[in-house]
Length: 118
Picture 1: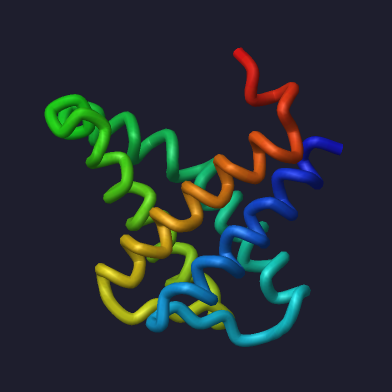
Picture 2: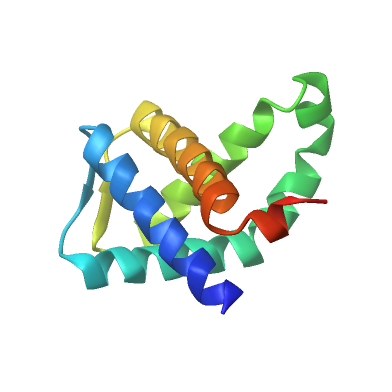
């Protein structure tokens, strides 16, 4: 059940990024957002830990800000893998990754408060 909730939250976050950043386009409807969210989740699950580990020294030096650059790369990889998601430029991907991170965090706090408590 939690996996399904995470999938829907990521789809909403991708929708928010596409709605707020002019250079991010998702070509299709609700099913397309779910597909992009699934692909983004897989890219994050497979490549995310590797890239975050490799960039750990830079992340520490920048007090965590470089993690957003890694998330930008993961979003760009997702766009590269999918013909349904297009991102024009680094800054669009950067803003999209920032929006996805914020929306995902807020929705997790609201919809799944049990998993947010550590």
